[in-house]
Amino acid sequence: MTMIVRDPGFHEPGGGDDCTSVWYVCRTHDRAYRHEACGEGDHLIALHCAEHGAENMWPDPRMLMFPEGFAPPLSEAQLSWVRSS
Image (cartoon, rainbow, N blue to C red):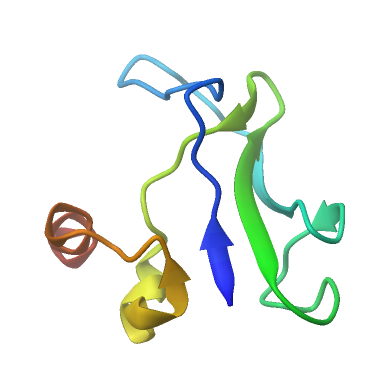
């Protein structure tokens, strides 16, 4: 299972943010997340910004391929946003 971590304590990116260095981090395996190559088992994925630290993120377009594989499941609003990108 791949779970996207969202947390009220994470930075909430806005239109004025100019984050140029961001990457996905697997909190389960405590390393960069690169398409499940970070280790075996479940993955807790968070977006990490060099400037703000952990950020809340919108779904990655790759999630459209397997939306049922994410917990919590993608909402209709999230799916619509990704499909419009």
